[in-house]
Length: 224
Image 1 (tube, rainbow, N blue to C red):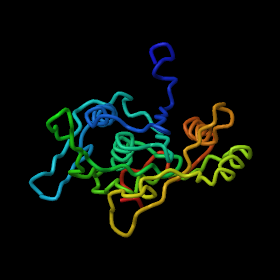
Image 2 (image 1 turned 180 degrees about the vertical axis):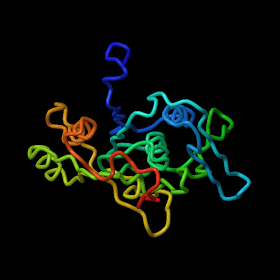
Image 3 (image 1 turned 90 degrees about the vertical axis):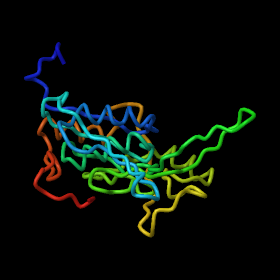
Image 4 (image 1 turned 135 degrees about the horizontal axis):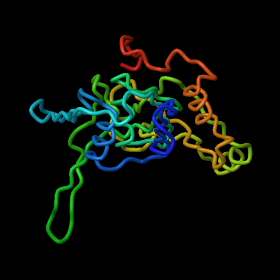
């Protein structure tokens, strides 16, 4: 940004497509970079006294510039925490397709003989109280990236599905009756074929308009 100059930067695109996640503290750090205040995420177990809340500290890396977050069916776990936090605080517009829905907290308990037991102990919730588990983050602007015909044919021949999502996994942690199916995770290798990225750039440059961009901090999201 120093070479471009802050006055020429119209906004930022945070591409979380096919980002499978990582450590919770890194998701908090990334979210915190764009938020001045407020809750980023909470983890809630069976008992209310097990709830943990993580809040932003002062300072916005972009100094208030518009942000568009790209998600798809390959966006999971920590990347969903980031997308959900920025969406709930109306700090960014989420564009693309529904994220994976990996919203469970797992704890590793060491056992004797170099063994270990992994238990699901809590769930992640966005600042507005949405559970990510088996639901994912629904974009403010839904745009499905089309698969090339040859890839569609290969997937069909293999009897596969073009979508990815926690709710479709056998034995996944249930989350009530309103679970959501996944979405495609295809991202073109050539940016000129990337319709999601193109729309994000067009919105930042002002060549296209959408009511969801920039987000209205006074409007309640349909996702809340």
